[in-house]
Image (cartoon, rainbow, N blue to C red; front, top):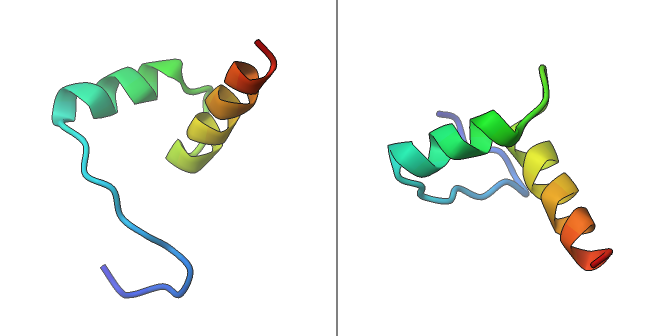
Length: 44
């Protein structure tokens, strides 16, 4: 994967990645899923 400035990589197990995908909406990126979950958590 080519290096892109301002982007990092996090390691997830395949099981965690699948759970994250299940929480996502069609066409949503992992970043969008994580940000949406973080926003929902802050509202609690």
